[in-house]
Image (cartoon, rainbow, N blue to C red; front, side, top):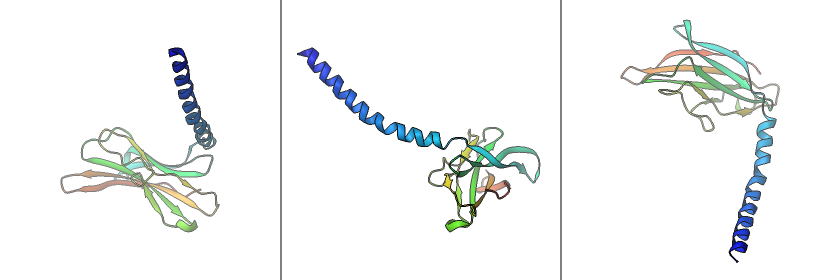
Length: 157
């Protein structure tokens, strides 16, 4: 009887696992079908428009025509510093829309000890829609955050 109850409980767990696993292939297939993320434009992060570069802002697109902006700083940020990437959309029904790493779907601004962040992804298959990525770096000298560098990629598709 004990063997039967172990067998039935194992079969029950296996059934639950089979139900849970049946949802995974669809998600995995979607993620796999939208692979091939590549930088389509980039710009260095310069302070006062002078070298050296403190990081890079990039406009990225995957194979499903999802676009996003990423900023990657050259080294982890120090205390009282932060950085953010912005995705600007031109054309379509959302002309002028700006999303940042802090927007829903992004992963939050770059803060102390971090190097990178990305904006939410925006799907755009219409050829008339273009995007640009903007990167901004800020420092708090005691009176709130002030922008210390900014650069943008070219507007592209």
